[in-house]
Length: 79
Image (cartoon, rainbow, N blue to C red; front, side, top):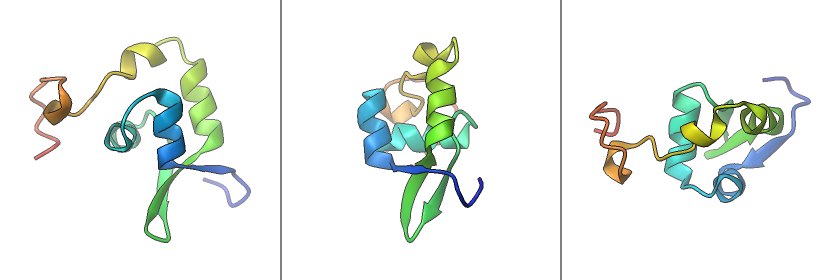
């Protein structure tokens, strides 16, 4: 991500997506959002969020991706 990119706090992104902060982190892990840790807090690139929201499949991918929170996919990524 570039130094001039605007970033949003993870709680802001979670609220906008109507999901949890953990789910936002899982979206970063899956490459659906671009984020990084700054000073011990996760931030998400605003342009990444806008691209995600504009993508045709964003509502489908907005489901909880963590098996401990209901998707039951058995991916094991939550430990």
